[in-house]
Amino acid sequence: MRLEVKMKINSKDFFLEEWCKTKVKLNRLYDDREVNSIYYDTHNLESAKDNLDGYAKRVKYRLRWYENDINKLANVEFKIRSNKFNYKKIFSLNESIQNLNIYEVFRINNDVFKSDYENVVNLIGYKRLFPILNISYLRSYYYFEDIVVTYDRDITYKKFNRKNAEVVKDLGKVIELKIPENKLRMSKKLINEFPFRVTRNSKYITGLSMLGKTSYL
Image (cartoon, rainbow, N blue to C red; front, side):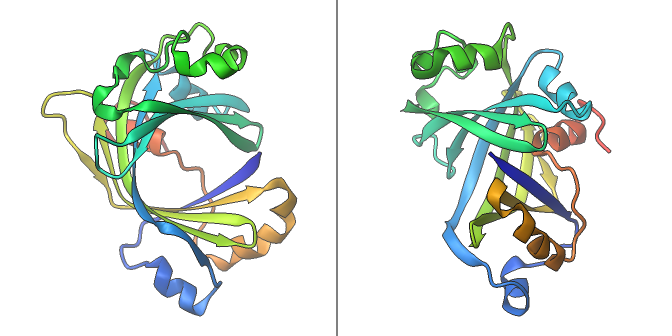
């Protein structure tokens, strides 16, 4: 379980690498990589509505792979919110994106869920989930103590599988701190070093809003 603290940056002139030279020393964790996701929801967007209504317990459903390569293997992910904290259940698929039946990924009878079937049934319930939104962005990874800091930019959104679908670019950038429960106290100092306001931010909800599917303030 971890607390996720997010900051939306609307300044095109902010560069995290430069900022780190004069402020907090963040250490590189991984090389930069492109993150690609397809978010799933019901036809009436129950998952999105749970987020907008601020339900303490909610789930996001997504298919995720890295780099712009349809031959890459993908993961099925459940991102679970429980009060203030988040955790993920990840199931690795043995097929590439191009070979998957995208519409069947979140069927309860998917073989990949056999290892944790009862929990998956509880997470999906009676929902019929459909691919809704493609999201891509470039992510940098850092760490400070045991806190992972990610920096996302070049964010794009597109409705899933619409011919000639508009690709919408988000000019903002997102910094996120992934804080283990045992680091909550010391994380306050790190948060205060950043010159940005902590805010709610969901790429899924932002993407739906920019594409006219929901309202997000």
